[in-house]
Image (cartoon, rainbow, N blue to C red):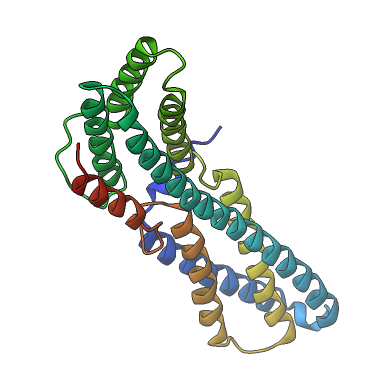
Length: 258
């Protein structure tokens, strides 16, 4: 099975340039193939045009499907961020119902966890003593101790801690293991190359000269591909989920009492 990180390892600028070159080579190859074989004299333009239209329709469908996949994951990351912010805020509030010194320790762990989440998102560069998983392990240990000391009395607080831990796993899944599969990228590029080469072949059959529109097609297709790739790569490019809700939470926690 191909490594899902193979395509992600290619820089976005290289994806754009490589896609544009592939499109230009494909359309040029189709045109030269038709001209070299002298198909224009023996092959009707209309049937070729119909088949090219079918291929381009299939390409449009795959582009829409792939874009929808990336856009859905982007939306899921936004919702997961808001859910995590709300869960942390609730846990911080509900820590007020547990006794000292656990109350202060839990709130300290939550503040450190928020700082680590901002660092994990690539937005903040703050020195954090422990990674997120270790912070959550300590938070769970504190919650278990409080629950054992107060059976049935802090169920709401324990539920908030459990939700924070679950949302950590969900956000990791959405960020690192929910990208567009390499197989789908491969199918998209294969259909694109065949469709655009067929379009160039149709131009050769029709006997038209090579048009600057070929370059426009290459640029437009490359822009769509880079847009999909940007949506699919959190933390890269220009399209990223805003971390402002987490920043606002960090500021609120810093201003509140321990």
